[in-house]
Length: 220
Image 1 (tube, helix red, strand yellow):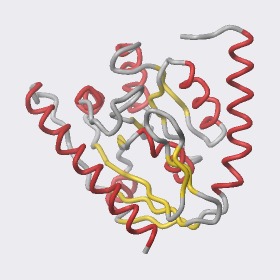
Image 2 (tube, helix red, strand yellow):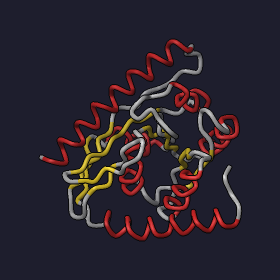
Image 3 (cartoon, one colour):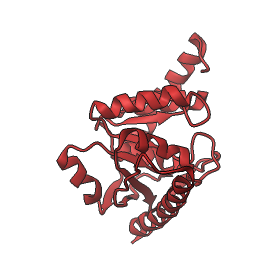
């Protein structure tokens, strides 16, 4: 992992400034949620959840689910450290790693969090893309923990798109933000690679559909 005193100070500063700017901006948003009963039923039963969503929707979704004690998987790259510093201010904890870097350590950390009753959050197209490609490795956590996967997506009536690989979504002040949730999916531990790849494709299509629904909801 990238580090050192100067690097840590830079990430901390960027995280603080980011939270200081985005928090007041997001506080002006008019929020609406579509079919949130899909995850609320699980919450009512005390069942931890694995939220999956496109990397581009990380910031508005983190704001919507702030202060819920969710544990998110974040890359060990430098930009991941900045994100950790930001979302920590919104009540998230994090496990560092990805399917390509620190995978074993990350999986162990997520399993520990799940056993402690924490909800998890994973971006299946992270940490560096390709954008909107659901990598089957993201389902390994669901296999290892037995937790249901709940897809969700965000849409805004007016927004900016960051010039980054994922085209991150940042809603304009006072715009309408909509979050659309899909039904929970189970990922049996005995599923082979082919079945996992098929499920990943299905979930990728569902995330695209949810993205379209969230965008339509936000502008209606």
